[in-house]
Length: 159
Image 1 (cartoon, one colour):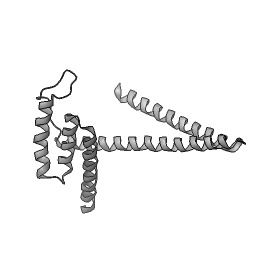
Image 2 (cartoon, rainbow, N blue to C red):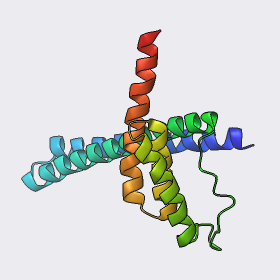
Image 3 (spheres, rainbow, N blue to C red):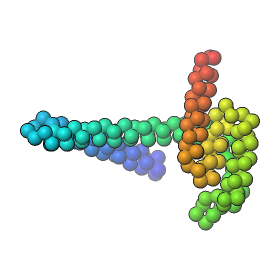
Image 4 (cartoon, rainbow, N blue to C red):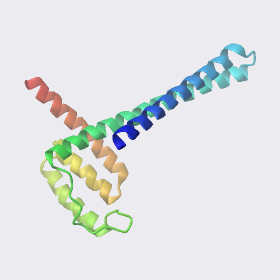
């Protein structure tokens, strides 16, 4: 059921966004071309510019999500995901502070040994996430994605 519903919902959402962006561009353009008032023309330009920013932000979020899915799938295929099932959890599902610190210390030591490996960066980003430091997790995950792309392109070049 999920294999049908999720893609359908994503397709409908994407179609809705395209329609909304197209309508906003049309609205902005009609304000620019049909109005004799400078304020309305400026408002139309603003609508078009904000629509362009919204479209860019939507694309950036989607691109980041796709890259995160790829690297997560690669990490799962290699069996390098962090095992947090034995650690203490809060009722909310998050790790207890002491358990997250212990996990972070262990993974940080692994990272120190191989800082240029995408796997170590990925695990460190996940440890930051479990510790609650989302900003650093995103920063390190970007590094992991870049290193993995360089690693896979290097492997392709050797063939």
